Image (cartoon, rainbow, N blue to C red; front, side):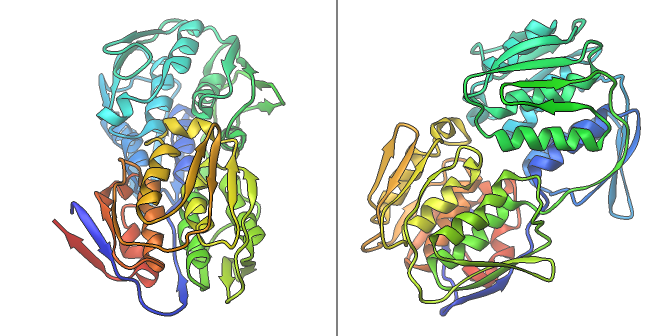
Length: 426
């Protein structure tokens, strides 16, 4: 479908929404399982595009099977990725697979769609080259496509900027146990999205690796991975959208299975909504967010460690009784979209007053919403966030809503209790 109009049910929101497994955790676990010497079982994998890219690579390598609903991965220290890998729009997957290709015994070409080709990769390519790999640009240097030819990776100490993308550091950490000398990364400057690096370390430890994360130094001991049975917890990044619905329209939403002790930095969504005036509680293994007719309040918050929540929170903040400011997220201009500029441009179409600042946005309360056709900019999180506007503004239409397939292909069907039945347009 090329566009989608939403007509939510009237009255307060009252729903229980099951969300996919965390793609961030799943992608890390898949790489660890691939490199572990033996068979691992992975439970709760999501079916979004990012995870599908890595699963397809494993299929081509004949390393994956499904038994009783569980994915079984046969790993090995001897890695030989396919000669050509199409990462489509999957930034995390492309970066992780580029690092793994540097371990292999053959040459792999990593490529993707035009939006992924535009995203920066030079810090990762330079780091892999410093470790002994040969990373050759096949187009614009520092971007995909690249040819990765394994050299003799020697490990040791690297300096990597922390203010560009934590995915570069995570990609390097994931191959660290496979290097004879291990790996020490000196983080130069502020480490953005630190929670994702901590998540990487936690998943690696579940597969037997030894990782130590300090303020500006991360150490990975040599020794490889051991196989295990790994359960992927539900995705807080996805849960943000149904939970934030009660900031737009009063009511109550439950998401089953969310853990109060999650590895995910985006578990911060419950604290942010609570700070704005929503009630949050854990009920029988579910997280519940609710709000009556009490007003929402604007907040001033640094979201550097939970930047994927910015689109959902920006929409919620439109319905507060005072301005809100998000800081610490200048780096999200280079996500699937310019998540500051594109976000602001589209929200202005429905009547919002939003100011893009150097490292964030200033959001004023929405005075009078108006219907609009909103572009999704190849960005699943923008599409999901904009869908919530329909709870307060009749006539919101999304262009290219299918981009949600990146992380939650069944988003609109699963969210029908909140957003209403689909009304696709062509």
